[in-house]
Amino acid sequence: MKLLLKKIAYPLIKSRPDFLVIGVQRAATTSLYRYLTQHHQIVVTAKWRETYYFDVPDNYSKGLGWYLGHFPAKLTKGNKLTFEASPSYLYYPPIPQRIKQDLGTIKMIAILRNPVDRAYSAWQMYHNYMNVSLSHLRERADSRTFAEAIEQELKPELNTATYPYNYIDRGNYAKQLENYYQYFNPETILILNFEQFCQDLNANLVRVCDFLNLESFPQEMIQQFQTEKYAAANYERKPEDEQVLEQLKDYYEPENEKLYQTLGIRYDW
Image: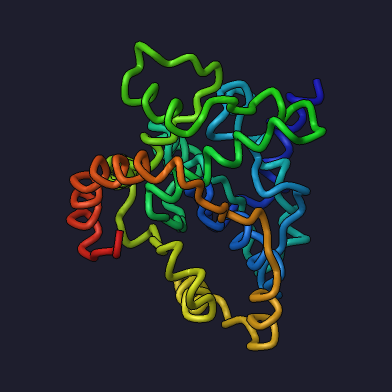
């Protein structure tokens, strides 16, 4: 009964997101979300950046009304913008079609990171879950070495992982963007570079604000952001992993070339 009420009422009284941050994992998605939630022309009501709607089939089956329950009421929102951010939205193939179907044409932002560094950072995150106290994170921990994880993803018949980490495939950005471009004009998706985002936060936030037709952040806020860290994406490299990292660099060379052709720009990857 409660879900039925949401299905009927929420599309009438709740705001739809004005834009989405769609990825990628271990590439400052959390930081960008935190920065944007502090902008005076943006309002959010959910406690978490992610609704787990488009990427979790059980949630998606609950319908648009359930999804809109995560966003502010239209009266509360007024003329401000609202949004959500999920680092997995870029990756899973069915998602762009779902977004188009439920939200129509919408602006989106993705931050791309050197796929070798992204894969290594993701592995270290999951590997470190073995040492945390939260049981739901320990259940997702990857006990394998980095070399084992990469070898098993390159040779699926050897894969012993019970959780879909997808360290390698998540870095194949060209095919993910091409999937989105089947449903959305590339001009509706702002692509940022993680390394540039970290090196020049001010310039990249100006790009974001221009893209969303927002006023620029005051300089004092930018200075404050530069001292804040959210879900730090960098870990110290282990000497024993250098050979595997070089192997990944060779693997991604043709994949990165596809990306550069798709975007019409080159990164120093």
